[in-house]
Length: 121
Image 1 (cartoon, rainbow, N blue to C red):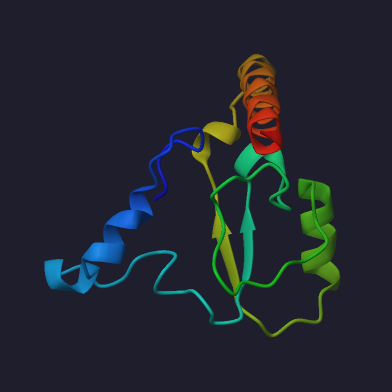
Image 2 (cartoon, rainbow, N blue to C red):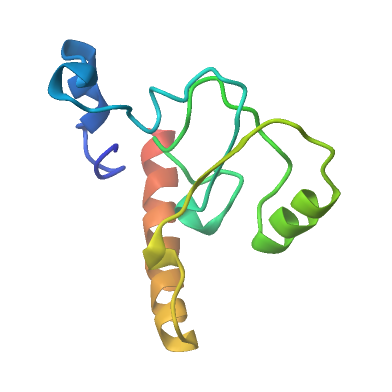
């Protein structure tokens, strides 16, 4: 949807010039659901709250106080919400064993540090 977060290019800019419906596309995951009052949750940067996200966001989405998966589970179990939930999940964040999880975690940590440095410029 957005391309590399460290790239100067954002794939969504294509839809500023073209209408995806002209190409037979029924909907675009972010544009079609924007401003509908959904609660948007993403695992970008290994945090459900989006604190490490550079571009992964939905216009008009509501925020909820979750960061970890345990926070998310607890919130869903206790939430008195009628709003729709919109999840963006990246399969590479969910490893089948501890070694792959550790490698991914270290890689994500390094990328998140890079994102934080770029934001400060």
